[in-house]
Image (cartoon, rainbow, N blue to C red; front, side, top):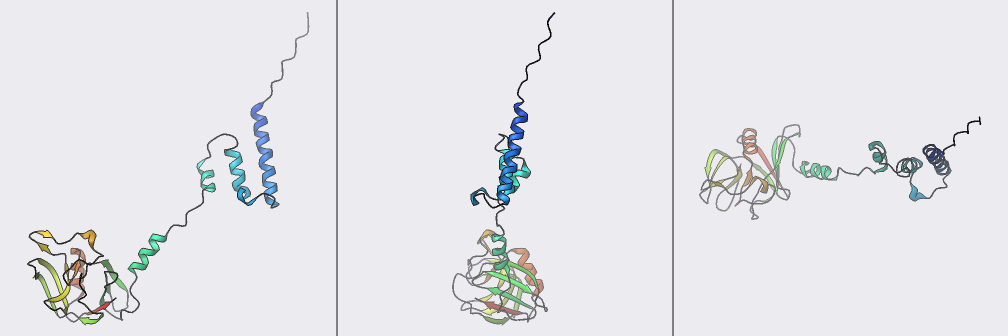
Length: 217
């Protein structure tokens, strides 16, 4: 009877691979801490993530991906929008309506110079309104345009060559709007300042006779 042969020892590749990867990670972290790694490798933390995931041939986790992906600066569009909506510096003081011809925007401002509402509008395609300070002198809930169009919430504050100039909603001609809401923010009118219906109603409620209107470039 012979003695049993010992079972062959099989190399444990999984453990060897994990130990090797751990050793590499430790070495990289140590070199990174001493500033001996090239700058392209990034920080020691990012290098370690790369080795523990990519080097081992698996897909990085979401947490690892977040650490490896630079966060975009962002916010530029929001900042641009905020700047566009900011009340013009040279627009007077106190309770008033402000209209900017270059920005095609209106602001309703209270006595404390706080903006209560601001929105895009469509002013004149022609240069028929000079910058300056005006006063509301006439109002009509319903009005008729020089081209036969109809409009609502007309608040007049200036005089043009052929007709009064004021704020109102987008006119209707033969039952159709003369422009789209999407076109607000660009000059589209014959002389007045066109607004969305809710904005026209808000200005109507805000601006009784005698209300100051400031027009700026």
